[in-house]
Length: 501
Image (cartoon, rainbow, N blue to C red; front, side, top):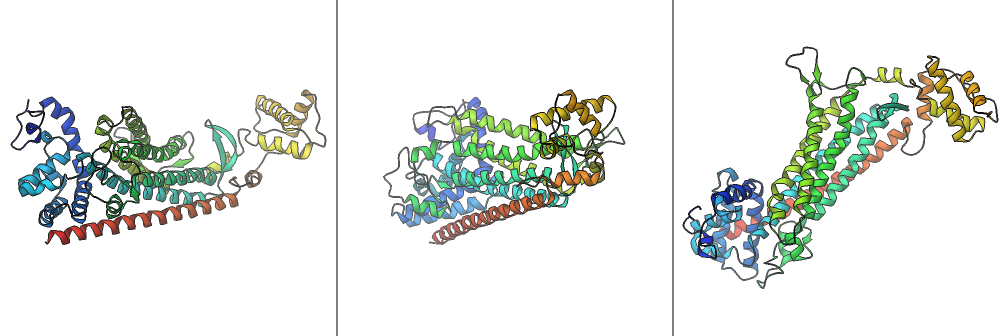
């Protein structure tokens, strides 16, 4: 057992002793490790509370002024230099201890009408607002770069793949634009998470409120929150908004991970579709010729880690309500998740921006491996009067025959033989069949002219839609950031004015 230091609160209460070394090592150190993350938010929460106690006519102005002076000094102190000590438990206790050392009894006004967890709940929401805006900006920029490359490659024909098997001619710009569309959904998720955390637990008191006459709406405005939490107990103890942030972070990473999974294959010499920029690669120490796609490994491994973190955060929520264990590991995990996701998305942005696409090589492969078979079946429907299932069977037989003969394309003869073998004849003459050249393949791609299709003008159209949605989301972020900054600047100005009393 650790001897409690002078003034240790637990020694004056029901505990009568200090914590065991094991408790400090396993629990308290974990809480104090989050202090550097929460330090600024705790300072802002404390300053807001002091101002509210004055506005409510509860705390004497002289004591409140002294508290503001010290709390502003706390705010200006590097968290790494602040005397956070795990023997006191969480960061709040170390702060209270330091205030009492500096101010004596005047420090006792700060905990009026609130628990220590209230300050922590406010702080984590303040931190997450900042981190979510950072993640939002990273996803928006990545989406913009994907749009730029998609427009650039809207005419670059290739054999699109499913299950990594040649499927059908398309354009590489259309392929990339799909990841840009995912980016807009991730922006929506991040905005939703921001709305969830942009609610104030300030003024919650113990369990169901406090008789201290604080104004929760005024406190929310002072901290730049949209509104107070609607239910005090829920706002203080439910961690699901933080879980949503962790899941949104994992989703943002997962979107770029799926691209990274593809690019790692496409960048191999066996495919030769793309070459990663030198800034995204790493040389082998032993093998002089190797160009390792290191950035893709970082993205893939990071995404797996974030999925694990999100799962872990969910599991810790499986507790009875109003418990500590679902929060003990949450602060650092959710902030770390949003920060990691931001780094991974920024790395993916660099990868996409510096990616060299082998346009000529892609075009040379387009139409090979019988990837025009579906187009041929469609022509049998449109020009030959067959239902699609019958057309499918005819083309499938023709492909099999051509493949057995060692030929790379289906001929009119193959089609005729396949139709007779299936006991059917087209209602009209067979469509003319020849080996498709690049112009033919490009025409097939252009024929997919529905909304969201691979026709080049549809790709450009889709990119314009994505760009518009990104701009709207960036405007939201700018407005949110401005509202936050204005409120916090006013809070600090009011605290500084009171400190001069």
